[in-house]
Length: 268
Image (cartoon, rainbow, N blue to C red; front, side, top):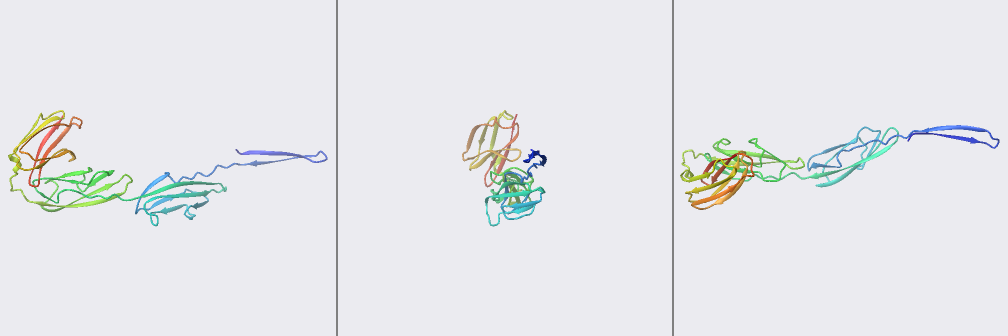
C-alpha cells in the first residue's frame, strides 16, 4: 500500500533531524486480450487489441496497440500470442491468448439428380453442422422438394452450413425436373391403411398391392425424416410407436424411382 516513511537521525553531539518520503504504490495495468482460446477460420484474420497504454511488446515482435493474425505460415492448429504493456508510470503487465485456426466444413448435398414434376425428392446436406440455410429458406438438415419448389428443366438448390466455430461452406445440387403431369401414378392402385388415425403415436400401417420395391418414410411437416425403411413385398403390415414424438401432423411417404404416394398421419 502507499505509505509515508519517516526517519530521525542523531549525530555525535546529540543533534537531531527528521525527514520523510511518501511511497506511492500504483496498480498494475489491466490488459485483456479477450478469451483465453479463440477459434478463427483458416482463411480469416483476427485482430488482437491490447487497449490504451504507453508502450506495447508482442511476442511477434510488434510494438503497436493491435496486431492482425492469420494462419499464413502456421497452418491449422493453435498458436499462442502474448502482449506485455507498460503504462505511463512504467508499470508493466501481460496477457496471453491462444488462437486456434480451424478448417472450413466440407458439405455435399445428396439426393436424386432428376425428379418427375408430380413426385418429390429429399435433398440432404449431411449431419454434424451447427446450422443450415437452404436456398428455399429451410433451416433443416434435409429438405423435401416437390412441385412447389421447382420448374420444368434444370433447378439449382444450394445450402450454406456453419460448423461449431462459425466457419461456413456452401454446396449446390442440380436437379432436372421431368414433365410427367400426364402420367398416372401407379401407386394410386395400392390400398394403404393407417389405423387408428389420429392416434397417440402408436398405429398400424398396412399396404396391399405393390409389385415392386419402394422406400417407406415417415417425416414431420418440416420434411425431416423420422424413420425410413425399404419394403419389397406385395403385402406389408407393421405397428409403429411414435409416442415420443411431438404432437402434430406427420406424413407417410412411399417412393421409388418411378412413383410417390403420401398419406397424412396425425399424432395427438
